[in-house]
Structures are given as structure tokens and as C-alpha cells.
Length: 158
Image (tube, rainbow, N blue to C red; front, side, top):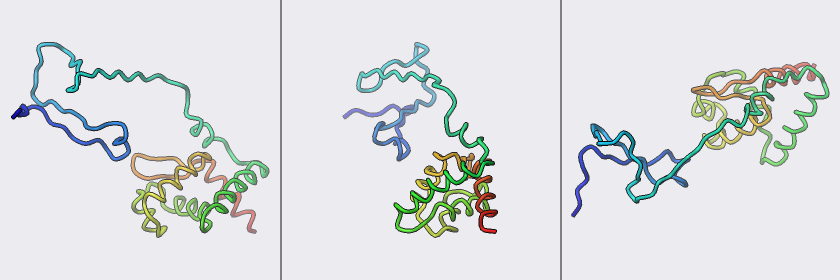
């Protein structure tokens, strides 16, 4: 029977990574003779390379103002298509909810909007793809573009 050293622990990755990563290793108080551990327990070496591909297009989009009626109408048309595919319209009500509760966590927004947390997160991501919301360390808020759209909706109703 092999015993595990006291300085070695494993832990499962967050749910979103479990398809790709089986476990994380943590060495506590272990001082190897060399500076860098190079081999995983299976003898496999994995190299991950990251490089900058440019600014996130959603960041650029969310800063774009919706001051022209045609642009705002086009975004509303995209939202209407999303609403049509859903069992009931949700896009504008979620924008209003985030606008009324900037910085609220997904759990709080889901409770206020009476929906499952994962459904809320998927929907916020859909709005984010259109540049209407942005994620904070905790919670969400409307982007400049999202606030412009709500303003356009308010003025259209009058």
C-alpha cells in the first residue's frame, strides 16, 4: 500500500473545468532539490501557452453609444428575436432588473427575477455578447450601451 506524503494534497477543480481537469495538486512545505517541478504524477508534462489576441470585442461593443435611433432599433430587434425563441420574453425585464440592482450577485438577481441562477447567468451572458451588460467582481451592471438602450426604450414609450 502506497501512502501519500503529508505535504501533498489534491482537490477537484471548479465545476466548469471538470471536463478538462481531473484534479489540482498542492504541495505544502515541500522543498524540491530543483526549482521547478516538471512532471505530473502520470509522468505527463503539459504545457499551456497563453498569448494576447487583442481586446475583447465585447468591451469595445459595450462602450459604443446607442445615440442613433437606427442602432438602438437594431439592438431591440436582436432582443426581440431572443425573446421569440424563449418560452416568454425576458430580455428587457432582465435589463431593467440589472439596471435597478447594479452589482447584485447572480443569486440575488435570480431570486428577484424568480428564475434559476444558471438560467440567469446564461441570459446575462447573452446580453453581454450584445455589449449591454458587464460583469463585476461580484454581480453585474449595465454597460453604457445598456443604459442607452433603456433610455431609448423609455423615450419610445412616451
